[in-house]
Length: 342
Image (cartoon, rainbow, N blue to C red; front, side, top):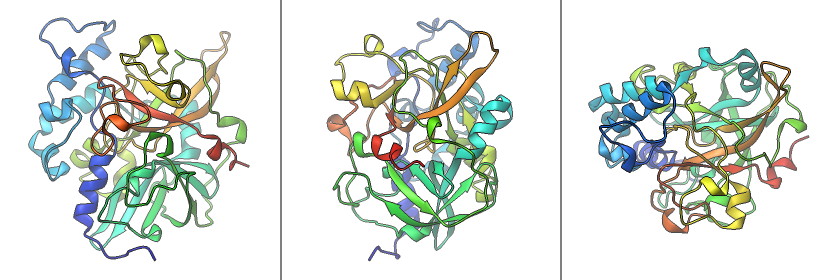
């Protein structure tokens, strides 16, 4: 029987620390002179804002016991980073909004003190969602009941869809232990709902040509704290996407040393786009382009965002995808997920 009694503050801190940390640019690139290898003003300003963050955030580890207090204590630097490196929902192209409206949402935990925003998630059917496993499990002291979680779609942000079941990944990792990268995904069953869903199996893939552009998006917890005041009813206003250069699946010759394993090269998605706590579990979206069109001819989900490239304990050097401080890491959609799409 899953535990129902736990300390929600401890759980919040634990899950926040495991979710994607502040990440986009290596600490060594924070200089006072011209930013190395930056070719456009938008990306350069994002570098500058990133480098103005407290050192603990640039290193990808948050030492404070309360992330909210940490953000509020450094709100000017965090607000600048949010403005410089991310764009809100309203700045998305209409075709991206249409696609994301069907699939994207946020995962909440219902505890004694109310709803807590945990991570991003996305739908693969009317009643099935995918998220990062570490958003739910991995704390050695806490195992919440699955019924305490709920999902809200960005298409209907105030409509609560209860989680009524789960589908384990292929790993036998105990729920109190963090899973490694290849197994860091989980499928959850929603109660029957009337929130529209129009995506088809062809819009979910596991391979993509390297150097192709990606849409990296999700909830930015900084905005959720500073602008939405951590109000669950206003969570959708904290949606962000990353318009700066670097949002592409990097090939082997653009990855730092040591090179990843062959399996990691085929299953891990490496990119340099900015990301933030709360984006774990969000869909990574690719596109097919037609030169005759001024837009993609199709969009599709290629993977899910996991973490910043600099692992935090208990990942460390044993992480399947490796440790790359100036990258972000996602997981290409496993066949286990693709096989469950009608």
